[in-house]
Image 1 (tube, rainbow, N blue to C red):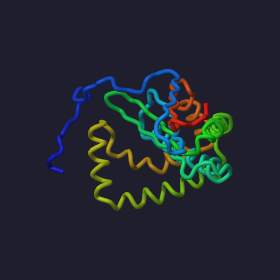
Image 2 (cartoon, helix red, strand yellow):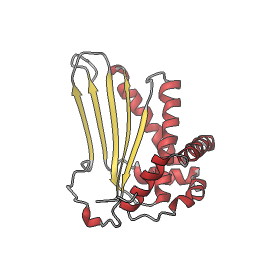
Image 3 (cartoon, rainbow, N blue to C red):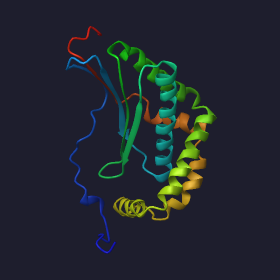
Image 4 (cartoon, rainbow, N blue to C red):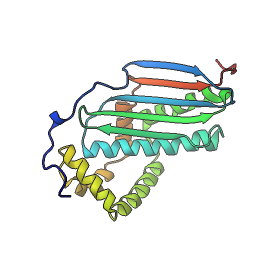
Length: 212
């Protein structure tokens, strides 16, 4: 740890201005001949950076993953493994990106995108079922307990905290931040970050596909 710089300043970060474009963008690319499609749905924008807000965004990611696995894979048998990912940064700007991706048959693209957006609208309207939140909290606590035993986790935590000017004691608020995750809190966070104001829809289809 002796090699770590003692101080970090926000001016040490150079903002290259490389961010996802704003607004709503839809692009379909026709490439290849294999009868498979690939879908990426991306939400992005400014982020109210804090440890508590990060926990809420993480919870939304995991809960939506649960909902999409149940809906797209198990109920509709349309995809093998829908994936939800998120990333939030503090410097050079506090921003987030939230990505939903899955592969499917070309004929199922529109149906599965519609189902995905419907699940998001449900979260906006009522939040997730409590059972989804309970599952997320149980899994997150198990991961947390395991992480605390890892030197690599502690090194990453210390470096990231110093770089972001975060309080090194923020981890003590883990339990209280996790307990604040509720159906109502995720309803609010979904409306805040998955509003669709900045939304990119990217679809890859085979060249010979007749799907429009």
